[in-house]
Length: 110
Length: 119
Image 1 (cartoon, chains in turn blue, red):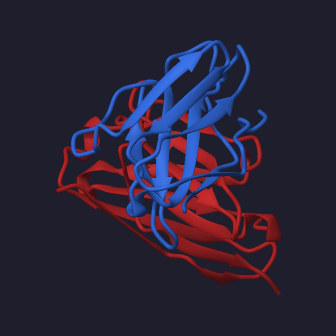
Image 2: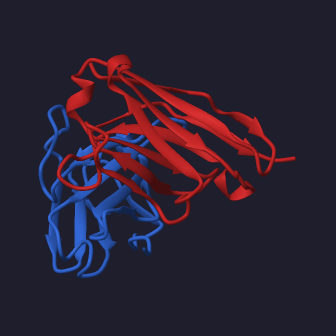
């Protein structure tokens, strides 16, 4: 199972919005609504930010939103804040009783 | 508060074995699928294995199938990963997560335990 494709980096200034893409295939991202997004700060464990494409766990700011179109899922961070600077990973059910992750995107707040 | 605490990592020689543990608290352990995810130094996340609450359903990544065994002790609220025939490619921080591969997202994660395979 191949990893999902994410851009290696993204950036934006405080207050701006940034969107990170996650491209898979019809066998994973396109075939199921089990896409999640995780935030990881250096030296820390990942934190769930979005699940089932667009749902936010309790405690996650509504500045974070998710969507999907075809085989590509997206995470949008609005009103960027300094603490949003982190690595972001998408994941999807792989369709063969497995879970596949994206390669990760390093988000820099300028 | 959900808490997950991995332990058991360390330095092991190629071909060796290691058993990781993940002690949990703050939720009804037996009701949730649990997973292991690893991260090689400077690399991204890689799913390793998932096990259902009753241990009746178990999945493995192709990269560890036949070498790793996941199991759980619901009476002890603890998840385990037995790792055999280790190679340098298994060097990573291993995280346990509350959740599975599809219907239950990985909602909570531990801080990870480092496994280094080297002679």
